[in-house]
Structure formats: C-alpha cells, structure tokens
Length: 376
Image (cartoon, rainbow, N blue to C red; front, side, top):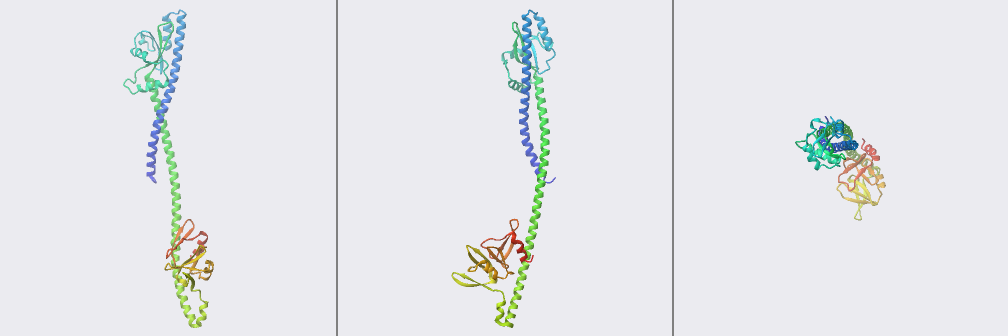
C-alpha cells in the first residue's frame, strides 16, 4: 500500500484517542443507564410496597384475620425474587413472615437485621448505583439481595421490606456495558474505515497535485536549459558576426577610405565620470539602467558611468542584436548575460557578469520577445 506509514501512524493515533474517549463514554453511559434503571425499579418497588402496606392496613382495620392478610401478601409476592426488586414482610423481631421463596418463611435473616439500622428509607438511584458498584468488586458480589427500603404496616408489627437483587442488577450492569462496548467497537471500526478512505483520497489528490507540479517544474527546467543553451549559441553567433563585421570594416576602409566608417554601427557612448567626459566602447558595456532619473552605464569591469541621454535614446542608437530592453528600467548586453533562471510563475530573471546592482526581471509580457531575440 502506498505510504503505509501514514496509515499505521494515523491508525495508532486514532485508536489511542478513540480508546480513551470510548472508555470514558462507556463508563458514563453505563452509569447513566443503570441509574435510570434503578430509579425506575425504586419507584416501582416503592409504589408496590405502599400498596401492600395500605391494603394490609385496611384489611387489618376491618378485622380481617392476620393470617389471611399474611397469606394474601405471600401469594402476591411469591416466586418473583428473580427480578431486580422484590418484596418481603418481616415482624419487629426480624422474623420473616412473607418471602418470595417460601422456604425462608419463619427464618431470621441476619443481613436484614443489620441493614434495618443502616439503610436510608429514601435512598436515591445514584446512592444505590454506588452501593451496587462497590459490591461488584467484592468477593460477595453475587450475594442474593440487600434491603433498600422499609415500610411499616400501620396498626401491626409487620414491616414491608424492599430488596434489591444484587445478582440481577450486576448482570444488567454488565449487559449494558457489553452492549455499549460492542456499539463503540463497531462505531470505531466504521470511523476508522471512513478515515482510511478520506486519507487515501486526500493523499492521492496530494500526490496528483505534487506530480503535476513536478512535471511543470521539470518542463520549466527543460525550458530554462533550452533557453540557456540558446543564449550560449547566440553569444557565439554574435561573436562570429562581430569578427565578420570587423573584417568588413577593414575592407571598407581599404576600398572607400574614411567615408565608409559613417555607415557602420555606433561603436562608443559618451559618458561622464566625476564630471569628466569619457567614451565607453559598446562591446565593453554590461548593462544600462535608470535610477532616480539618472542613466547609469556599467562596464564589464564593474565601473559605473553616467549619461545625459535617456534610456530610450541610448537604446535606439544601440545594435539590437547585442542589447535587449528587459524592462523600462534596464537594457542588458548579450555578452553580460551569465544565466537565465525562472522568476515567479511566468517571469524570467537574468544574472549578469558582473552582478547587477538591481534585479533584471523580464516580465511574462516580454518573455516571448526575449526568446525571439535569442532566436529560440
């Protein structure tokens, strides 16, 4: 797989972050779900306990035999100790009078007696959750039940006891946790697959763009190489032409005398240096530029001179085969050009010998004219 390291690193980072978040989310959601379940069970158990207490109190007040009342209660709660909350009835001595499991009737539950003095009658779902959670890490985690509420039956020695089935609640707790873990695993895998798809799309797009830029850069390098080769060839051709012109000049002088000199191209420019008039040979000029309305002429040896003529006037008097008007500010000699490099997207930059005091930039509008000048 292309750039597998990206997928490996991304996977490790995502899994680490997701596991932390999923762990916290599972704990929180499991807690909230269990608290909601326990709250419903508490309300349901409380309502049933009050109903049994009220019905039993009314029956006893109507002189119904206590045994009949107890038998009725026994039938109403029998065989339901496998639910999360169930009821039993004890007397003030702690003896079990009614219990879902008839075999416990008549016995004394020591745990019940202990809890009678400790349990709060208005226990909340959150308190009960903490109670169950603490139980789940003890050796007696699967103890059958614990008392969570007591409701006395008026005008009698009987008490309706609400029990929580520890084993069932812990099972519900574990079932919630297992479901949420499964959901988060599936969700994590789904997100990871989607993430891989997005990474693959982004990386492919990135490499396509990078490849396109590389291709353009290679094309640009080839064009620049071609341009520099053309520059070298042009400089050689000009040198050959100059030799031929020199021979032609000598021949013209021999044949026609000094009258033929006036027909030849201009060979010098009149310049100033420290207020002294100084002629500069055309072939010695590297470049000419304008700065603060002053025209400067730079020779190949780096010396700088000034001229009274404007850049336009000077350019019109020069041999256009030897000089190119790069822009409004500068004229460059073919012999001074050392290298042509790319500048920006569509512009060119000329490096000269000696190095130019200002950047010689050929804009995109002049680039084609420059290439034509080099016979490219």
